[in-house]
Image (cartoon, rainbow over all chains, first blue to last red):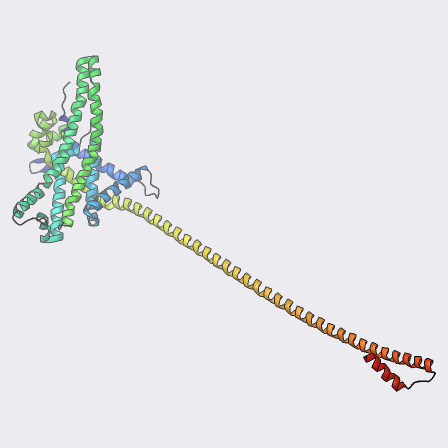
Length: 249
Length: 187
């Protein structure tokens, strides 16, 4: 039995949508899971009632709402609520797709750098365009921190500018690498169980207990990571947007 | 479906067939031939999600939360007004009670004073009446005594006249008898 921890990340086209230049645009398994995530979020948010005393589904919807809203308020202030739909969409999309991706035999959208890069660039350009549109030239004050002596200012500004443009890189790679590494580790440890069982017989099944325990522990950790990375992505988005809203800080 | 896809995309078949055939050594997240498909799907589904979230989901859930908040605040405000009302009613009741008590006290005092004054007046009238009766009685006693005394003088004068007649055999002069009686009475 061959362990192939990379196979789970394969993009498999289901049908072709069209062509852009010589590129084929296909509806892939990734697209399918995006659709699943959108459907789950829509059902959660829309099918739950609007009762005075919420039921279970409505509670989950309201907790998600309050959670994202309080995250925005605490990091980007009340003005950040302008971006509530964007941050809510990002958080729920990443969180739900990560949690769906943890189910065995499913596909994890955010294990592909191109997807996380797309989301990170969306945030980056939102910050840049909104920041310049709202504050004009004052937006570039974020590159000039207060209270820095004149002789190190050029160096600090260089670092600030560099870090600003590296934001989408770190923003996207953090999510991508976490999901990728977690799924590979899970697959490897789970593969050990089967490999030991098939190659060593009864002794192997006994020996497989250890990697099985590890797999279970890792699985719990991955559930945490799935949520946590969505939260990290959302809170970083809030922090970046805070720069666009209050460039003086 | 995979076959039809493979047939349709013959110009760019290379990377995709590789991916379908167990990724042939390539690392799927870095296979650039899949990037366009993923980005297009991401754009479609994320925009769809954004529209659903911003137009339907958040207004609905936010509205439910706000309605609950308003309901709670309204109920609390109503409870507060009711509490205020009951407190005001209690205060009014206490005020009424205090004024009634004061009024009762005043009435009591007034009637007691009136009764006292009346009793005093009656007592005074009775005393005066009694004093008058006493004075009258004393007057009667005095007049009775004077009358008695004058009777005694008459009797004494008669007795003296008679005695003198018995002793001397002559009828004495009434005037001298009277003078003698008077003198002895005075003595």
